[in-house]
Image (cartoon, rainbow, N blue to C red; front, side):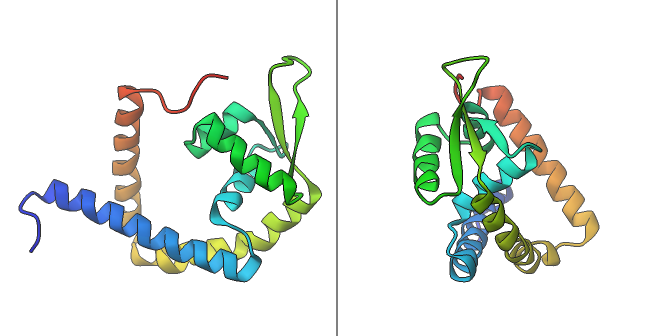
Length: 155
């Protein structure tokens, strides 16, 4: 029975769609490249930085994680040879997370698989108008949530 409140129904459908699509994308990426989706996300953020590196707190904020959770991700990825840590010369308390050549290769190999999965499981179900509408609505909601409280932690 559908919820009589269409806003609560929209909320439930958003959560369900997100969980289902992320589960499929995770499975496809692991099967094809042995790479967890969360690791791909780290590599994506490092790649998009332009330099292949971000301060630990910037990475945590971009992943919407606490610094301790980001540190655990980075620890595992460092053991796998995908990233390294470098001290920040300007601020000895700061640490950069840097993508290695092995990390770059893993990202390049995984990106086409992930993007194809996004297309098949998400974007091909939207026309251009629906995509623009959905992006605008979700941006408005994210902006309101950010205004209600900060996402991420201090440096």
